[in-house]
Length: 198
Image 1 (cartoon, rainbow, N blue to C red):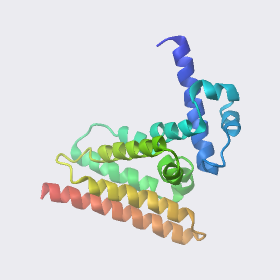
Image 2 (cartoon, rainbow, N blue to C red):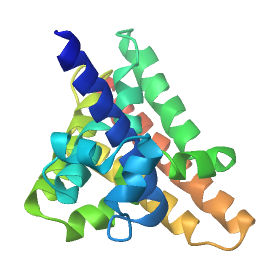
Image 3 (tube, rainbow, N blue to C red):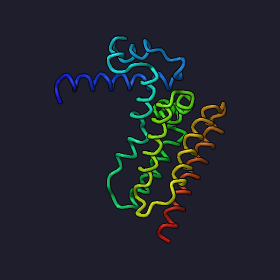
């Protein structure tokens, strides 16, 4: 890769990181390109060198910067039992009440779901592509993977719990919701693994 290509890659990454932060904090519609570029420490002109419009940036953020997918991919190629337990551990960390604010401020999929739904077809396609990649990564550790609906339900439990918990005024109710979602998600995966080996 040439020096210019590496520079362009670094600049694009800075823009994506800043955009994800601003979109998650303010929502896509209220986010301005100038605010994103200021957060990235770059000029507005640099934006148009990498993206034709703000809508293209939303699609890129959803499609390339999903922290849950990245952490799923980082699981080692270990024995199936270890991968399965690693998946439950990761879900438990993402739904831990103590980590709620950090997850809400860093995970794109639940926070930007509404923006994707209201966005252009490219944003919805990016959202679907990321979701499918998450389902595929979740299935790692299942030698004969169960039906995809198991992983679809788990992801819905996780993202829905985070959104509902975010609307709660009570810390106790928020913690109860997150813990219930965690237990239900891991129980579903344990049951699927048990059926597979039964």
